[in-house]
Image (cartoon, rainbow, N blue to C red; front, top):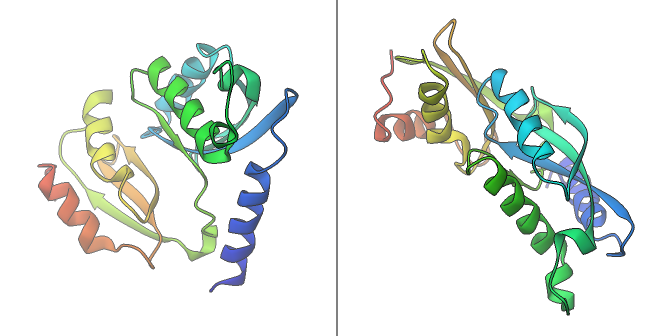
Length: 186
């Protein structure tokens, strides 16, 4: 196992398993939905619509953010059980809040822990990208695939770029997913 990947995974687990008290906490999340630079402002707008969350930092290029919250504001069950307070359940609830605020155009996951220098960059020339919806459609066809760390769409060059974990996927699998979604490739 890659030592850096192991360290990052352990750090993520430790980070998300801090004591679940009423005090303010932070979580680093991976954002699915930042398909192009214009969507960064859309994400900020979605977070502002969720009073239970605050945006500490946002890296649109790497599709990640640090959010602040209080567990008591996120988990609102009157008698929350310990299993309701796990990092996974808290992240699910944060994702649900952001999903509702963004009409499900954003979703959040835990960071994968794959080092930046371990990712493979692949690019595809694709068809029509004139509107935000077209760009998002091409992006979402691959963004949630296992092994896709992040992706972006550049309407000026008509290019979809994806950063992949080569241990989980490859260019051919991404190309197949794009064809299945009927995205025109050049």
